Amino acid sequence: DGLQRKLQVIALMCLFDPLTASTRASIEDIRGAAQQVLESPALRSCLQLCLQVGNALNGGTSRGAARGFRIDVLPSLSAVKSSADTQYSL
Image (cartoon, rainbow, N blue to C red; front, side, top):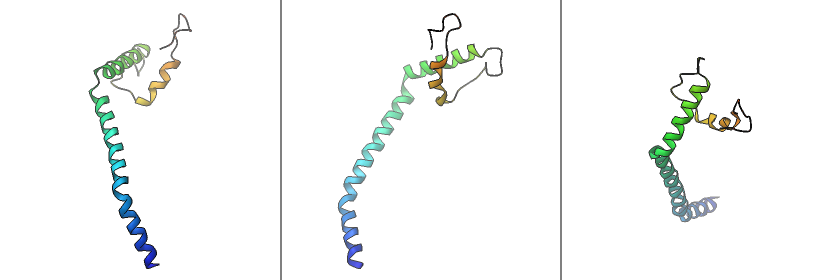
C-alpha cells in the first residue's frame, strides 16, 4: 500500500507540469476571448441595437423602457417576425 502511494505521487509529479500548462493555456484562451468581448465596439453596437429594437417592440408596456436584457434572450430574436410580411425576421 505504501509503495502504491509512492508510485501514484511520482506519477502525479511527472504529469503535473504538462497538465497545468494545458490548463493555463485554456485559461488564457478564455481570458483573451472575454477581453475581446469587452472591447468589441461592433458587439457593443449590436447589443445596443437589440435593446433599442426590444424597447420599440415593447413600447407602451412595462417592458418598453428596459435598460438592459439577459444575454440568454438573444436566440429568441430569430422568432421575431415582421407584421407586414412574416417571411422577414430579425
